[in-house]
Image (cartoon, rainbow, N blue to C red; front, side):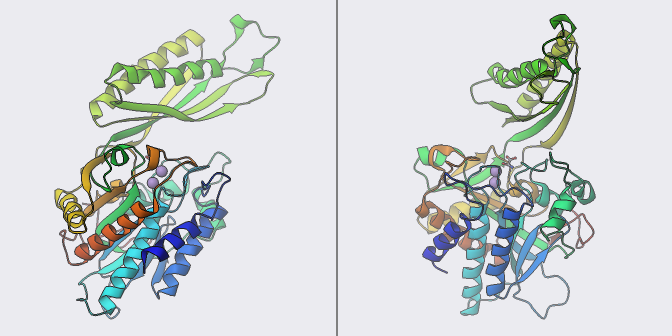
Length: 432
Ligand code: HGY
Ligand code: MN
Ligand code: MN
C-alpha cells in the first residue's frame, strides 16, 4: 500500500458526512457514522480480514497470522475513532483509523513476502464515540473496552433528543455481540490539535502524558414566568444565573499562570426556550483541564463557592455534578523511546509532547502498553471545519506507525495479554 493510496483513501473518507467548508459531521451512531463503518469493513474484507463489532459498537479488523491457533491470539492493536464533533474536522480520529488500516496492510504484506511471522496477531480498531459530542462522556467505546466504564450504563446514555446509545447503535446495525480481542499493545497516531509541532517545524510528537481533565454537569433551576408581566423582583431567572456561571467558568483561568488551566462551557440547553417565558431550567457542561491536577481541583473548589453565591443572589437552585474525570495518564517510557527511535531511523524530526485533548489511547494506556503519536496541525485548530494537516505530514505518520507496529509485533513492549474487559462479549483477562 503506497502513500498515494493512503491519501486517496483518506480524502475519500473525508467526503463521507462532508460539510460545506471541508469539515465533516459524523457524530456517533448517526447514518454518516454508519457509512464510515461500512467503508472500514469494505477495506478489511478486501484484505480478507475478519471484522468484529463488540457490545458498545467498537469495530475491529483482525489480521490473523495464526489461523490454526486455538483460542484468541493476542493482538497488537492500531487505531483511533471515525466519529466526529458536529461540524468537526475531517482529520481528528479518522486519520488514525485509516493510518492504522494502511499500516496493517503494509505489515501483512511484509509477512506475506517472507518477513518472520510474528508471534501475535494484528488488529485495527475504530473506537465508538470517542468524541462525546452526541453521547457524553467522551472516550466511551475504548473506556468500556478497557473496563473503565460500564457497558450497560453507557448503552443507556441518551442524547439531547432522548435517543439511547443502544437504540442508536441498533438503528445503524452496529450493536455487536462479538468477542473483544486480547490486546498485547496499542499504538495510535493523531493530529496534535495544538500549535507546538507546527511552531517548531517538528514532524512527529511522541506523547508522554495527558492533562488532567474533568467535566462539571451543572443544572440551574429557576421558575418559569411571563417575560412581560412578571415584576423583576419576582423573577427566578435560570438563564441570568447560568450566564453568570458561564463567565465564572471562563474567568477562573485568570487565577493561574497563563494557559495553565483551560476551561469552557461548550453545551447549553434552555427550557422552555420561549421568547416570552423567563427560563425555568438551564443545563450546562463545563470542561476543566490542566497539566496539574491541583489546579483543576482549586478551580473546581472556587467555582463551587461562586456558584453557591450566584444561586443565593438569583434565588435559584444550582446542582453541580463531577463527571468524565480523567486523571493524568503517563505513557510508558519504553513506548516513547520506541517512537523516538523509529522517527530517528526514518529521518523524521520528533519531540516529546503532552496531550491536552483526550484520546482512546488514554483509556488503552490503563490496560496495555501504549504508544501515542501526533502529527502537526496547521494553526493548531481542531473540532472545526478549518482543521488541517498537510499530506506529507499525514504520510510521515503512517510510515512511523507502520514501523512501530512492526516493532510491537516483534514484542518491543512487554505484551499485556489483557483482553477487552467489561460487557457481555468480553474476552478473559482484567484491566491492569
Ligand atoms: O475529550 C476530548 O478531549 C476528546 O476530544 N474527545
Ligand atoms: Mn480525536
Ligand atoms: Mn476530538
